[in-house]
Image 1: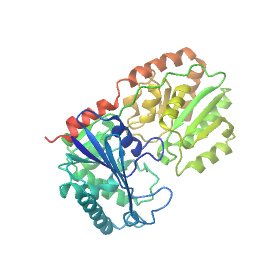
Image 2: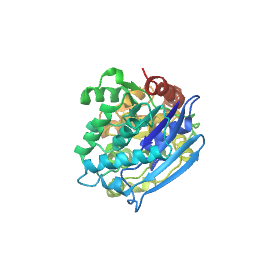
Image 3: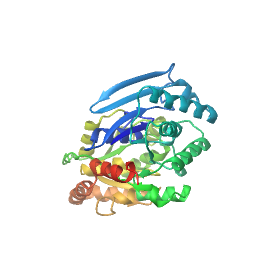
Image 4: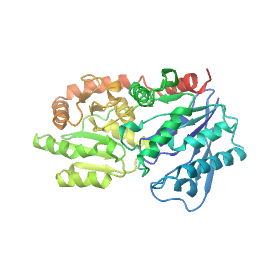
Length: 387
Protein backbone atom coordinates (compact mmCIF):
# COMPACT_ATOMS: atom_id res chain seq x y z
CA UNK A 1 0.00 0.00 0.00
CA UNK A 2 1.13 3.53 -0.78
CA UNK A 3 0.20 6.15 1.81
CA UNK A 4 0.68 9.91 1.56
CA UNK A 5 1.29 11.21 5.06
CA UNK A 6 0.12 14.84 5.16
CA UNK A 7 1.55 16.75 8.09
CA UNK A 8 2.34 20.27 9.24
CA UNK A 9 5.51 19.22 11.07
CA UNK A 10 8.29 16.98 9.77
CA UNK A 11 10.90 16.29 10.99
CA UNK A 12 10.21 17.17 14.65
CA UNK A 13 10.74 20.73 15.84
CA UNK A 14 11.23 19.35 19.35
CA UNK A 15 11.26 15.99 21.06
CA UNK A 16 7.68 14.79 21.11
CA UNK A 17 4.62 16.03 19.27
CA UNK A 18 3.19 15.53 15.84
CA UNK A 19 6.44 15.68 13.88
CA UNK A 20 7.90 13.04 16.16
CA UNK A 21 5.01 10.68 15.43
CA UNK A 22 5.25 11.20 11.67
CA UNK A 23 8.99 10.62 11.75
CA UNK A 24 8.68 7.41 13.78
CA UNK A 25 6.10 5.68 11.58
CA UNK A 26 7.95 6.59 8.37
CA UNK A 27 11.23 5.38 9.84
CA UNK A 28 9.72 2.16 11.22
CA UNK A 29 8.13 1.10 7.94
CA UNK A 30 6.39 -2.23 7.42
CA UNK A 31 6.25 -4.90 4.76
CA UNK A 32 3.77 -3.90 2.07
CA UNK A 33 3.39 -0.37 3.44
CA UNK A 34 5.19 2.65 1.98
CA UNK A 35 4.87 6.21 3.21
CA UNK A 36 5.59 9.39 1.29
CA UNK A 37 5.44 12.67 3.22
CA UNK A 38 3.90 16.00 2.25
CA UNK A 39 4.86 18.54 4.92
CA UNK A 40 2.93 21.82 4.66
CA UNK A 41 3.23 24.03 7.76
CA UNK A 42 0.37 26.43 8.21
CA UNK A 43 2.34 28.23 10.87
CA UNK A 44 5.99 28.96 11.62
CA UNK A 45 7.70 28.86 14.99
CA UNK A 46 10.57 31.10 13.96
CA UNK A 47 9.61 33.23 10.93
CA UNK A 48 7.21 33.19 8.00
CA UNK A 49 8.58 32.16 4.57
CA UNK A 50 9.33 35.02 2.19
CA UNK A 51 8.33 33.14 -0.96
CA UNK A 52 6.90 29.81 -2.06
CA UNK A 53 9.47 27.05 -1.74
CA UNK A 54 9.36 23.28 -2.16
CA UNK A 55 12.25 21.05 -1.18
CA UNK A 56 11.90 17.43 -2.28
CA UNK A 57 14.15 14.66 -1.07
CA UNK A 58 14.36 10.89 -0.83
CA UNK A 59 14.65 9.45 2.67
CA UNK A 60 15.14 5.71 2.57
CA UNK A 61 12.23 4.37 0.57
CA UNK A 62 10.12 7.50 1.07
CA UNK A 63 9.72 10.68 -0.95
CA UNK A 64 9.43 13.80 1.21
CA UNK A 65 8.18 17.20 0.07
CA UNK A 66 8.70 20.21 2.36
CA UNK A 67 6.42 23.03 1.20
CA UNK A 68 6.67 26.58 2.54
CA UNK A 69 3.94 28.87 1.23
CA UNK A 70 3.55 32.42 2.60
CA UNK A 71 0.02 32.72 1.19
CA UNK A 72 -1.06 29.59 3.01
CA UNK A 73 0.56 30.70 6.27
CA UNK A 74 -1.19 34.08 5.98
CA UNK A 75 -4.57 32.33 6.13
CA UNK A 76 -3.90 31.46 9.78
CA UNK A 77 -3.25 35.04 10.88
CA UNK A 78 -5.49 36.67 13.45
CA UNK A 79 -8.27 36.83 12.39
CA UNK A 80 -8.00 33.76 10.12
CA UNK A 81 -9.43 33.92 6.61
CA UNK A 82 -11.46 30.75 5.99
CA UNK A 83 -12.31 31.53 2.36
CA UNK A 84 -8.67 32.24 1.54
CA UNK A 85 -7.66 29.08 3.41
CA UNK A 86 -9.94 26.90 1.28
CA UNK A 87 -8.83 28.57 -1.95
CA UNK A 88 -5.12 28.24 -1.20
CA UNK A 89 -5.52 24.64 0.00
CA UNK A 90 -7.08 23.77 -3.35
CA UNK A 91 -4.23 25.46 -5.22
CA UNK A 92 -1.66 23.46 -3.23
CA UNK A 93 -3.52 20.17 -3.75
CA UNK A 94 -3.80 20.80 -7.50
CA UNK A 95 -0.11 21.80 -7.66
CA UNK A 96 0.94 18.57 -5.94
CA UNK A 97 -1.23 16.39 -8.15
CA UNK A 98 -0.13 18.16 -11.35
CA UNK A 99 3.49 17.57 -10.36
CA UNK A 100 3.02 13.83 -10.42
CA UNK A 101 1.87 13.21 -6.86
CA UNK A 102 -0.82 10.56 -6.98
CA UNK A 103 -1.70 6.89 -7.06
CA UNK A 104 -1.98 6.62 -3.27
CA UNK A 105 -4.24 4.18 -1.48
CA UNK A 106 -4.86 6.79 1.22
CA UNK A 107 -3.91 10.27 2.32
CA UNK A 108 -3.28 10.16 6.08
CA UNK A 109 -3.91 13.63 7.54
CA UNK A 110 -1.98 14.26 10.74
CA UNK A 111 -3.77 17.31 12.09
CA UNK A 112 -6.74 19.53 11.41
CA UNK A 113 -4.65 22.39 9.99
CA UNK A 114 -4.35 20.68 6.62
CA UNK A 115 -7.85 19.21 6.40
CA UNK A 116 -8.71 21.18 3.25
CA UNK A 117 -5.56 20.06 1.43
CA UNK A 118 -6.35 16.45 2.40
CA UNK A 119 -9.91 16.81 1.15
CA UNK A 120 -8.90 18.28 -2.22
CA UNK A 121 -6.15 15.68 -2.69
CA UNK A 122 -8.64 12.86 -2.23
CA UNK A 123 -11.42 14.55 -4.19
CA UNK A 124 -9.02 15.23 -7.07
CA UNK A 125 -8.02 11.58 -7.36
CA UNK A 126 -4.58 11.76 -5.73
CA UNK A 127 -5.67 9.15 -3.19
CA UNK A 128 -8.55 6.68 -3.04
CA UNK A 129 -9.26 7.29 0.63
CA UNK A 130 -8.92 10.06 3.23
CA UNK A 131 -8.11 8.95 6.76
CA UNK A 132 -6.90 10.94 9.72
CA UNK A 133 -5.14 10.85 13.04
CA UNK A 134 -6.48 12.69 16.07
CA UNK A 135 -3.72 13.21 18.61
CA UNK A 136 -5.28 15.90 20.82
CA UNK A 137 -8.99 16.82 20.64
CA UNK A 138 -9.41 20.54 21.03
CA UNK A 139 -11.79 20.11 23.95
CA UNK A 140 -8.63 19.94 26.05
CA UNK A 141 -8.23 23.72 25.58
CA UNK A 142 -4.48 23.32 25.32
CA UNK A 143 -2.33 24.00 22.27
CA UNK A 144 -0.31 21.00 21.13
CA UNK A 145 1.89 23.39 19.18
CA UNK A 146 3.01 26.97 19.61
CA UNK A 147 0.34 28.14 17.16
CA UNK A 148 -1.35 31.51 17.46
CA UNK A 149 -4.61 30.57 15.72
CA UNK A 150 -8.06 31.37 17.05
CA UNK A 151 -9.78 28.64 19.01
CA UNK A 152 -12.98 28.93 16.96
CA UNK A 153 -11.05 28.41 13.73
CA UNK A 154 -9.22 25.42 15.17
CA UNK A 155 -12.51 23.86 16.29
CA UNK A 156 -14.01 24.44 12.84
CA UNK A 157 -11.10 22.69 11.12
CA UNK A 158 -11.01 19.76 13.53
CA UNK A 159 -14.76 19.28 13.13
CA UNK A 160 -14.30 19.23 9.35
CA UNK A 161 -11.51 16.64 9.54
CA UNK A 162 -13.56 14.36 11.78
CA UNK A 163 -16.49 14.70 9.36
CA UNK A 164 -14.67 13.94 6.08
CA UNK A 165 -12.26 11.21 7.23
CA UNK A 166 -13.36 7.65 6.45
CA UNK A 167 -11.46 6.36 9.50
CA UNK A 168 -9.78 8.12 12.42
CA UNK A 169 -6.78 6.64 14.21
CA UNK A 170 -6.43 7.59 17.87
CA UNK A 171 -3.70 6.56 20.33
CA UNK A 172 -5.87 5.64 23.32
CA UNK A 173 -9.29 4.70 24.63
CA UNK A 174 -9.38 8.10 26.31
CA UNK A 175 -9.11 9.85 22.95
CA UNK A 176 -11.74 7.56 21.42
CA UNK A 177 -14.17 8.45 24.20
CA UNK A 178 -13.36 12.14 23.80
CA UNK A 179 -14.18 12.11 20.09
CA UNK A 180 -17.41 10.24 20.71
CA UNK A 181 -18.43 12.79 23.33
CA UNK A 182 -17.45 15.92 21.38
CA UNK A 183 -18.42 14.98 17.83
CA UNK A 184 -20.67 11.92 18.23
CA UNK A 185 -18.36 9.92 15.96
CA UNK A 186 -19.73 6.38 15.39
CA UNK A 187 -17.55 3.74 17.06
CA UNK A 188 -16.82 2.00 13.76
CA UNK A 189 -14.99 5.04 12.37
CA UNK A 190 -12.52 5.38 15.25
CA UNK A 191 -9.68 2.88 15.66
CA UNK A 192 -7.45 2.79 18.76
CA UNK A 193 -3.84 2.35 17.62
CA UNK A 194 -1.52 2.64 20.64
CA UNK A 195 1.81 4.24 19.83
CA UNK A 196 5.10 2.38 19.97
CA UNK A 197 8.61 2.51 21.28
CA UNK A 198 11.84 0.93 20.09
CA UNK A 199 14.10 -1.14 22.31
CA UNK A 200 14.89 0.92 25.39
CA UNK A 201 18.37 1.61 26.70
CA UNK A 202 19.59 -0.34 29.71
CA UNK A 203 19.26 1.62 32.99
CA UNK A 204 22.53 3.31 33.84
CA UNK A 205 22.58 2.11 37.44
CA UNK A 206 23.26 3.99 40.66
CA UNK A 207 23.67 7.73 40.31
CA UNK A 208 25.45 8.63 43.52
CA UNK A 209 23.88 10.82 46.20
CA UNK A 210 21.40 12.56 43.86
CA UNK A 211 17.96 11.30 42.86
CA UNK A 212 17.87 11.84 39.11
CA UNK A 213 14.59 13.27 37.78
CA UNK A 214 13.70 13.76 34.11
CA UNK A 215 10.91 15.65 32.29
CA UNK A 216 10.64 15.84 28.49
CA UNK A 217 8.23 17.92 26.43
CA UNK A 218 7.29 21.19 24.82
CA UNK A 219 7.03 24.19 27.09
CA UNK A 220 3.28 24.68 26.63
CA UNK A 221 0.40 24.92 29.09
CA UNK A 222 -0.47 21.30 28.41
CA UNK A 223 2.73 20.03 30.04
CA UNK A 224 2.15 21.74 33.38
CA UNK A 225 5.80 22.64 33.94
CA UNK A 226 4.74 25.31 36.46
CA UNK A 227 4.63 22.48 39.00
CA UNK A 228 8.35 21.72 38.67
CA UNK A 229 9.45 24.56 40.95
CA UNK A 230 7.27 23.57 43.93
CA UNK A 231 8.22 19.91 43.48
CA UNK A 232 11.95 20.66 43.57
CA UNK A 233 11.47 23.08 46.45
CA UNK A 234 9.48 20.47 48.36
CA UNK A 235 12.16 17.83 47.84
CA UNK A 236 14.78 20.24 49.20
CA UNK A 237 12.61 20.92 52.24
CA UNK A 238 12.43 17.16 52.88
CA UNK A 239 16.21 16.86 52.67
CA UNK A 240 16.09 14.86 49.41
CA UNK A 241 18.95 15.67 47.07
CA UNK A 242 17.40 15.66 43.61
CA UNK A 243 18.51 16.92 40.22
CA UNK A 244 16.13 17.50 37.30
CA UNK A 245 17.03 17.24 33.63
CA UNK A 246 14.45 19.23 31.67
CA UNK A 247 14.33 18.62 27.91
CA UNK A 248 12.39 20.85 25.53
CA UNK A 249 11.52 24.34 24.43
CA UNK A 250 8.41 26.33 23.58
CA UNK A 251 6.20 29.30 24.28
CA UNK A 252 6.28 28.95 28.10
CA UNK A 253 10.02 28.39 28.34
CA UNK A 254 10.96 31.76 29.84
CA UNK A 255 8.08 31.66 32.30
CA UNK A 256 8.98 28.17 33.54
CA UNK A 257 12.65 29.04 33.98
CA UNK A 258 11.70 32.26 35.79
CA UNK A 259 9.60 30.23 38.26
CA UNK A 260 12.54 27.92 38.92
CA UNK A 261 14.82 30.91 39.57
CA UNK A 262 12.29 32.59 41.85
CA UNK A 263 11.95 29.38 43.85
CA UNK A 264 15.71 29.19 44.27
CA UNK A 265 16.00 25.76 42.63
CA UNK A 266 17.36 26.67 39.20
CA UNK A 267 20.78 25.30 40.20
CA UNK A 268 19.16 21.86 40.56
CA UNK A 269 18.04 21.91 36.91
CA UNK A 270 19.85 21.02 33.69
CA UNK A 271 17.83 22.47 30.80
CA UNK A 272 18.51 20.94 27.36
CA UNK A 273 16.72 22.62 24.43
CA UNK A 274 17.73 20.38 21.51
CA UNK A 275 18.26 16.65 22.04
CA UNK A 276 18.32 13.93 19.39
CA UNK A 277 16.76 10.49 19.60
CA UNK A 278 19.85 8.59 20.74
CA UNK A 279 20.74 11.20 23.33
CA UNK A 280 17.27 11.36 24.85
CA UNK A 281 17.15 7.59 25.31
CA UNK A 282 20.43 7.88 27.15
CA UNK A 283 18.81 10.48 29.41
CA UNK A 284 15.87 8.16 30.11
CA UNK A 285 18.28 5.36 31.02
CA UNK A 286 20.30 7.66 33.26
CA UNK A 287 17.30 8.87 35.28
CA UNK A 288 15.61 7.29 38.28
CA UNK A 289 12.20 8.97 38.04
CA UNK A 290 10.27 10.37 35.10
CA UNK A 291 8.20 13.29 36.37
CA UNK A 292 5.04 14.10 34.38
CA UNK A 293 3.02 17.14 35.43
CA UNK A 294 0.86 17.23 32.30
CA UNK A 295 -2.65 18.61 32.51
CA UNK A 296 -3.71 16.49 29.55
CA UNK A 297 -2.24 13.56 27.63
CA UNK A 298 -3.92 11.56 24.88
CA UNK A 299 -1.22 8.91 25.11
CA UNK A 300 2.03 9.80 26.89
CA UNK A 301 4.79 8.76 24.49
CA UNK A 302 7.62 10.18 26.60
CA UNK A 303 6.31 8.24 29.60
CA UNK A 304 6.32 5.01 27.59
CA UNK A 305 9.87 5.69 26.36
CA UNK A 306 11.01 6.34 29.91
CA UNK A 307 9.44 3.06 31.03
CA UNK A 308 11.23 1.20 28.23
CA UNK A 309 14.52 2.41 29.74
CA UNK A 310 13.64 1.50 33.31
CA UNK A 311 12.87 5.07 34.40
CA UNK A 312 9.93 4.96 36.83
CA UNK A 313 7.12 7.44 36.09
CA UNK A 314 5.40 9.58 38.72
CA UNK A 315 2.49 11.34 37.01
CA UNK A 316 -0.71 13.23 37.41
CA UNK A 317 -3.50 10.75 36.60
CA UNK A 318 -4.87 12.58 33.57
CA UNK A 319 -6.05 11.59 30.11
CA UNK A 320 -4.64 8.31 28.84
CA UNK A 321 -1.79 8.05 31.35
CA UNK A 322 -3.65 5.46 33.50
CA UNK A 323 -3.79 3.26 30.38
CA UNK A 324 0.03 3.11 30.46
CA UNK A 325 0.93 3.32 34.14
CA UNK A 326 -0.37 0.80 36.68
CA UNK A 327 -0.29 2.52 40.04
CA UNK A 328 2.17 0.93 42.43
CA UNK A 329 3.44 -1.53 39.81
CA UNK A 330 4.89 0.44 36.87
CA UNK A 331 4.93 3.84 38.55
CA UNK A 332 2.70 6.10 40.58
CA UNK A 333 -0.45 8.04 39.68
CA UNK A 334 -1.35 11.16 41.64
CA UNK A 335 -4.47 13.30 41.54
CA UNK A 336 -4.10 16.33 39.19
CA UNK A 337 -2.50 19.40 40.78
CA UNK A 338 -1.53 17.47 43.93
CA UNK A 339 2.07 18.55 44.51
CA UNK A 340 2.17 16.91 47.94
CA UNK A 341 1.12 13.64 46.31
CA UNK A 342 3.99 13.89 43.82
CA UNK A 343 6.41 14.62 46.67
CA UNK A 344 5.18 11.63 48.68
CA UNK A 345 5.68 9.19 45.79
CA UNK A 346 9.06 10.61 44.74
CA UNK A 347 10.21 10.47 48.36
CA UNK A 348 9.19 6.80 48.59
CA UNK A 349 11.29 5.97 45.52
CA UNK A 350 14.22 8.03 46.82
CA UNK A 351 14.21 6.13 50.12
CA UNK A 352 14.03 2.63 48.65
CA UNK A 353 16.47 1.65 45.86
CA UNK A 354 15.09 -1.91 45.92
CA UNK A 355 11.61 -0.59 45.17
CA UNK A 356 13.01 1.53 42.32
CA UNK A 357 14.75 -1.47 40.77
CA UNK A 358 11.63 -3.65 41.00
CA UNK A 359 9.45 -0.97 39.44
CA UNK A 360 12.06 -0.33 36.75
CA UNK A 361 11.93 -4.00 35.75
CA UNK A 362 8.12 -3.88 35.65
CA UNK A 363 8.28 -0.77 33.47
CA UNK A 364 10.55 -2.41 30.92
CA UNK A 365 8.32 -5.47 30.75
CA UNK A 366 5.20 -3.32 30.26
CA UNK A 367 6.78 -1.15 27.55
CA UNK A 368 7.94 -4.18 25.56
CA UNK A 369 4.35 -4.75 24.44
CA UNK A 370 4.23 -1.41 22.59
CA UNK A 371 6.02 -1.41 19.24
CA UNK A 372 5.80 0.74 16.11
CA UNK A 373 5.35 -2.42 14.05
CA UNK A 374 2.23 -3.25 16.03
CA UNK A 375 0.99 0.31 15.48
CA UNK A 376 1.58 0.08 11.74
CA UNK A 377 -0.19 -3.27 11.49
CA UNK A 378 -3.26 -1.78 13.14
CA UNK A 379 -3.16 1.20 10.78
CA UNK A 380 -2.83 -1.02 7.72
CA UNK A 381 -5.55 -3.48 8.70
CA UNK A 382 -8.13 -1.21 10.31
CA UNK A 383 -7.53 2.33 8.99
CA UNK A 384 -5.90 2.33 5.54
CA UNK A 385 -7.83 -0.59 4.03
CA UNK A 386 -11.35 -0.04 2.78
CA UNK A 387 -14.24 -1.92 4.27
